[in-house]
Amino acid sequence: GQNIDQPTEMTATEGAIVQINCTYQTSGFNGLFWYQQHAGEAPTFLSYNVLDGLEEKGRFSSFLSRSKGYSYLLLKELQMKDSASYLCAVREGNYQLIWGAGTKLIIKP
Amino acid sequence: IAGITQAPTSQILAAGRRMTLRCTQDMRHNAMYWYRQDLGLGLRLIHYSNTAGTTGKGEVPDGYSVSRANTDDFPLTLASAVPSQTSVYFCASSPGAEGDTQYFGPGTRLTVL
Image 1 (tube, chains in turn green, red):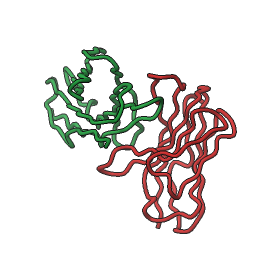
Image 2: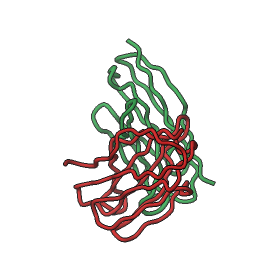
Image 3: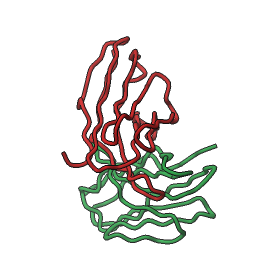
Image 4: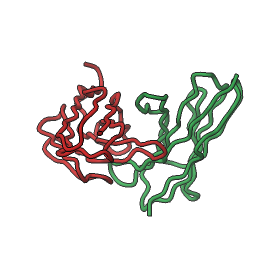
């Protein structure tokens, strides 16, 4: 069956680095997405991985290992505004995504 | 208009009433989606449309219907609302090519009493 697992909640300190993991078991794979969602707002796109390896975009990086069904989102130099939920989603076929429940990241001063 | 708009922003509805949630995008995206988001659960796909004139069922379609008469609009209708349909509803769109990104509207918070 389809399954995407992420930690429910994580806490980190302002200025530090945090890694949010995502493991998936799906019948197909056609890319993995990370989205950020602030409380009461819509999800916004952060990153996309379809090949193994690391994609870096400013303070955020995303890694994918297709053989292990594993991805992580790395956030560096944490800022208070990074407090949000981070959603992992896998595309099995053409357009539709399967979503994890999200990881709530709490940043402390 | 820039991006995706949804209306209403929030609504309280009596059980048994009919309700249509509106979604409009001005990006000329081919594909559109309706999700519901409930606490502790991931976004769940209700219905989708890969292109104007076609629709498909997602993971949780029961009790909902959609239409896609043109590229821009993708309304979601609850024929007879039930309390279990209390949720936050997000509309999204994507250009419609493989590997493309979904862009989300601001959401509609619906409470069914």
